[in-house]
Structures are given as structure tokens and as C-alpha cells.
Length: 212
Image 1 (tube, one colour):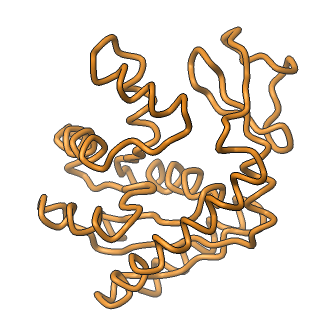
Image 2 (image 1 turned 180 degrees about the vertical axis):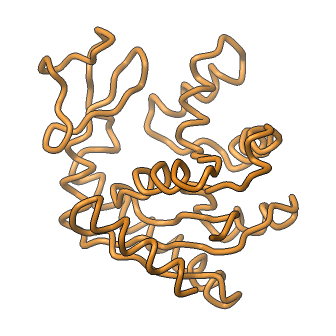
């Protein structure tokens, strides 16, 4: 089993779900930039306020901020057993930044799914204003409509609206294509169909990793 992995894929493809399961089964650190950012904004620091402002506007946090937070996370003890970088890098510059920082990558898994499936998964998201937990009105609805279990109000992020999602997917494809080719050229890439049930995808994931 590889110990240093990168999971790539468009928004809504389910790579986070697969990363958590694989990490738990093989005792790997699951390192998600989304999780890191959500933990950061809970803190009462100037950096947290800056990150919170980006996330509330639905805009991307600058590369240099995300990289610093990521490298700080990778200095924690659990990373020594191996790790899965979930959703990072997102573009070719970030890939080079990782290489310059000396972050080792053994295999890169690229998840894909058809556009309509991704749109439904994303446009159905609702986010808690207090704890930032994410629900989905189609697949994982809250027990009380419009409310998180913590009592916070649920809202749809501006970048989760269907028209915005379509634009995001187009932009992701444009930025990710060079990244996918970069890792393919290094002989590190394998591709996994992210459609169907999480169980189906996990089975394909294990088969793909074993075949590398």
C-alpha cells in the first residue's frame, strides 16, 4: 500500500469521502485543505479573520496562505505514518510549490464523474453559519429543515448555486488538465470513476491503486 498519496478531482466528486475511508483503513493522515481552513476560522486570530472573509465570500484563499497552513499540518506526528493530500494541489503552480517544499508523492488518484452528477451534489449543499458543517438536501439532509444539529442556520454558499457550479467546473477543468498531465508524465497518476455509490467508488479506488 502506498503511504503518500494525492487525491484530485472536481468539486462534488466525493474524493473527501474516499480519502477518509482509505486513511482510516490504512492508518494514514487525512489532510484536507478544506478541513484545515474550517479549523483555522474557528480561531480568534488575524489569520482566521482573513481566511473567514474569503470563505464567506465564496472566493479561493490565496495559494501562499493555504500552503503555509498545509505545511504546518504536515509537521504533526501522525503524518509520519503516511498521508493523503485531499484536494491539493489544485493547479500546476501548487504542484511545483509542493515539490519545492520537499513533500513526497507516490501516487496521484484523479476522480472523475459526469457534470450533472457533480452539479446535483454541489447545488444541494447547505453550510452551517456557526460550525461550518456541510449537509446535502438530496443525500444528507438536516434533521430540522434549515438548521444544523448545533442550532446554526444553514445557508447555500453563493458558489454552490447551479449557474456558479457550472462555471466552477469549467474553470476546474481548465486549471486541472495541466496538473493531471504533469502527474501522468511522472508515471504517478491513476484514474477512478467517482460515479455510483461510495462503496462502488472505494472498490474501484483499491483496484486502481493496486494496479499502479
